[in-house]
Length: 376
Image (cartoon, rainbow, N blue to C red; front, top):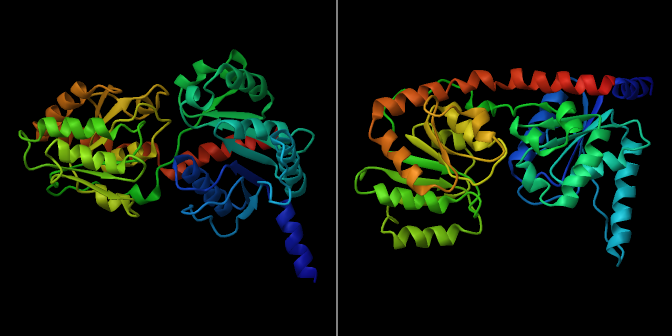
């Protein structure tokens, strides 16, 4: 009995960090949260993951972390949307009162609003983060006004790029810090130095924003000149069938492969020659970080958030092109594939991002910031 009481006391003495997100469904922000949860558990913190939903195909929560679902149950739901919103606010407020975390980190749009509002009159310090394109997370005047009104009341504000500052008012610009995402440990390894396979690769959800259609069209335009190369796009989504039909219509279906989701991305990328990111918008793309770390030649679009600019210098560790510019993509692909020595030089420089975004280094930055927030 005494040992049990002592264990409870030790648990209460640990600093307690909570994370608030919609779900742990596999995606960039979710992976960042799970990685941070694992790190802080290893460092001796208590960790609680609060999600609004539980979905299929989620990231596995590290052993030792507590999971709390904040969504209303069937018994709690009401016919009125207004009443349901009020009940959600109440329920999340009760969770902070009951769990008593020292701070909570949230991300993505309205979740940040909920965190600031529901932690009021509690001892929990809210930290909001913008991990995507700010203009998409807060796409209209009302959302932007609420962000500018509520964010200054947060104990901390985390942005991923310097460009994101300009979206917000001067109070937020002054208060916010820019913290990078750490590299997945699976990609911390020596660069492959053998003969590379004649493969062009990409990783991402198949939707309009990722614009894989442009890469297939650019590949088809260069297919005769570089007849040994194939294009493989890993991922799935609503445009999977459309992209298959497009490859067939362009006469390159036998050289364009869409295998769906994969588990070991590092192994699939390691020996490829070239990586493409053709999105219209991104935050700081984890797929791009991983491709650079693998030491591939990389071509990526300059997304409005500045995510690509944070990671790449055009002509130094890859080539950066305007979003939606197929001709620029064709020229960049031709430049790289037509000059293997140039491709190799860019790939070697790309791999140096392993040092810059090494998990132990980046996680220390997050820990230092969290400690500052919790100490007030």
